[in-house]
Image: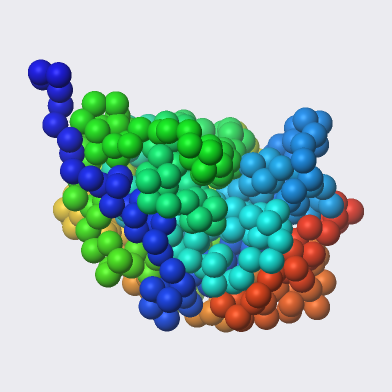
Length: 475
């Protein structure tokens, strides 16, 4: 019709669908396979840790009450449900404690989506090879992160949660590849999933529902692929439509060229990093900086009278709001709380997030010493440095110490080793799995491309762990 807004990038959805449908394990460079396996190990750890948390248990209870075809396990419970029910629960668990992996540009945490979908499919369908699962996982990473890249930080700043919105494309591409959708039906799966994208960022300031955004995105992707397999149609130009499309609706400043830039040649999977603290990623450089300053100069937290933290606009908006005890989610997303915990305890661990700790007088006192501000120099460095910080600590005797941290530990620019991710995995499952079971998981993932089925791994995931009582009830 006349006056219709122009298409943002011709055939973008079609081209991404063709890529996802046609991707084979043999197409994956060795370094992409290794990164995908590392993401899988990390994903298994965060999902198992999250399976026993209160908010995940509530979702489990709803699914159990609904009933359903017992096709796939609700991990850590001994319960089973349909595939869509299982990924709703298991992906909520994966995003349940701010420890899933992170693709900085797209602001996505893909492994809390792909891990439950891939292994849920393997359980529901029987013998599926590790190679098939890895191809599907990478398809999800590549398609979903490109959607997030094209949406830019504007999507987040406009108030939408990328995990619940762009995450639907991660899920649909993974599920569609597992179902063997051809390119045409994969395009419809993406078009269906994009219509179900949802998630609002106000959830970060004190709501359990932020965790559910991942579960709903995973469920939407699985449903979209199942419908597309039956001939149900979606918006075929979901990504590029000038009116009512994903980018034109969710982002005020999209860069559509990023949808297909380097597709099949430049691998976004390699741009995924890992969280080494159970908090929002954007504050990790600040936590690293404070730890470095306290270690290098040897001053105790009691000597600190002021911490000035400079950051870019997005990190400021995302994390620098005034802290108030409003639940675990809010504490994990807040810069000042994270710095107070680091100052008093030397680091930040899962054990720091209890209802009692949220109101600790010592932490609340230290929080008054934290003074965040937007740093125009960091902002001018652009999106690749949106996590960067510049910190100055002032001591009681008037001495100041400063440090600039551009790339957080665990990022692709400041990477951690397999051994460090393995240690994180073992920490996440400590007390949930036996040492022998943890060894088995590490061994299976290390050899994942050689697995002909995932039976032993699935048996570990599906076992009932509910008798394990977390000492921190709200962890």
